[in-house]
Length: 83
Image 1 (cartoon, helix red, strand yellow):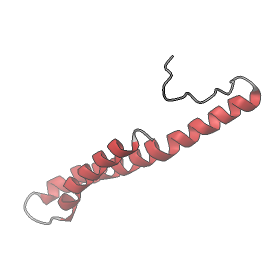
Image 2 (tube, rainbow, N blue to C red; image 1 turned 135 degrees about the horizontal axis):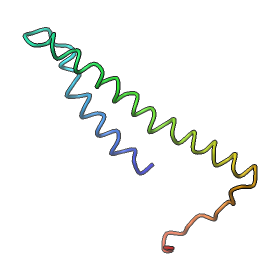
Image 3 (cartoon, rainbow, N blue to C red; image 1 turned 180 degrees about the horizontal axis):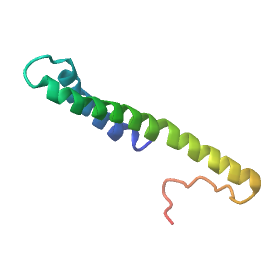
């Protein structure tokens, strides 16, 4: 959850700068479109990967480790404590 805002802000700024390049049809657009298209696709897929797939895989791995007894459940750390 701590990485949600920075990741979304980065993706929005990159998409906002590259989407107009994909829509243009003027001089130089034939060179810029092949450069911008993979970057736009990469930003979208990296967002899905970082914000959805990684947390889901992490939760499955931790749940499996808890079921097999290789990981002990920890108590939530209160806000005033540091280790």
